[in-house]
Amino acid sequence: MPAHVTVLYPFMEASVIDAGVRARLEQAAAATAPFALSFLEVGRFAETVWLKPEPAAPVVRLIEALTAAFPAYPPYGGAYPDIAPHLTIAQGPRHVLDRVKAEVRARLDAPIRTRATALELYGQTAGRWRLLEAFKLSGPG
Image 1 (spheres, rainbow, N blue to C red):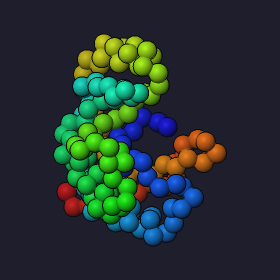
Image 2: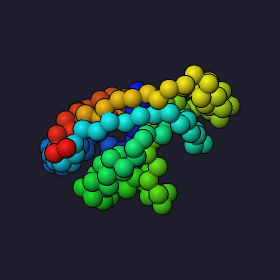
Image 3: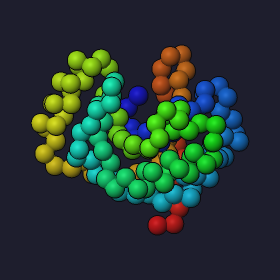
Image 4: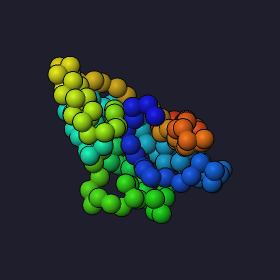
């Protein structure tokens, strides 16, 4: 899986994603305007190193829109009360992630800037993550 801003995980199995699911994803993307993001702060979950998106609000709104479209799939399986937008950059054993986090923090002397222009749907097939489809963010801005 490439570096990504997580918006709805876990999601349904790739084998059950049909035209109706794709239509709801497309509708959510079409209602969302492209938005700028910057990343400077490095964070850590138990098995993940991540960067904090700024501003977080557009990411949170997209997560909320997808949660409304797919209520059976709450963010992080409903395990956490708050949405924590993040750009996942590494996953693995804790001892490796401690080193990764320190190295990223040491090298990140200016914000990484980008523009979110699509909602990408990934699924696991044959044990590997692969891009299934991308939906253009095209809402009014």
